[in-house]
Image (tube, rainbow, N blue to C red; front, side, top):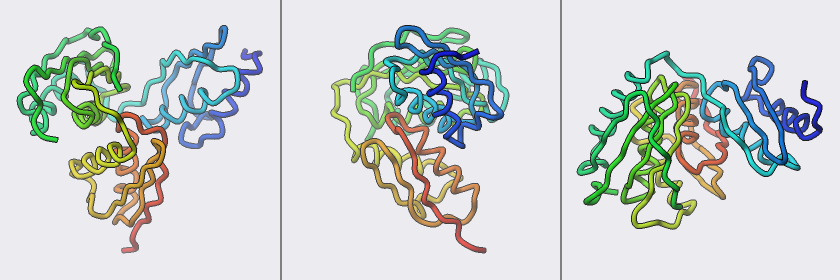
Length: 244
């Protein structure tokens, strides 16, 4: 039973986020010397990011050990996730000239993170999968490459989490404009979304989607696409659904 006031506050913050659906989710919290360990399964990547942000905003929390997983859209073996992602990376023109290697059943060690067109010489991505958790390490020439690799990983139906340890070489300064460009690129690459219908505004890592789309499914998919982008902290979905 959670007796710590900090844990009670953290759990109350989770309960205030409808997307997390805490009433129907078994999420375990533990607290020790300023560190909260959170473990469980949430509906999707958006719910995961909201949960971590809610816990991080709780007074007295200085660090989070993240063991949250997103519920997979489809059950897949690690080998299937690995093969689908490797194929997606190799088929994406942005990664032309970038080597892709896979480590079945093993998560590669994560390198420290720093901070379009084809990848530069020496660029390479190593992919590992364990328990549906995708780890990406290696070097890429831009934040666009780093973000797109992460989104492609999240798009694999069996993925439960993405640890994006790709290093951008040379390092780039990030900005809201860069995040805006990345979200637009992702929307344009999603065959289930008409990107022309969706406007993107980014302020302080918060993405606001505006416009009108033809169906609730497209509205939800556009939001999920934005959540999948590295460094997006929150998504405000103001997309309307056009009447038939």
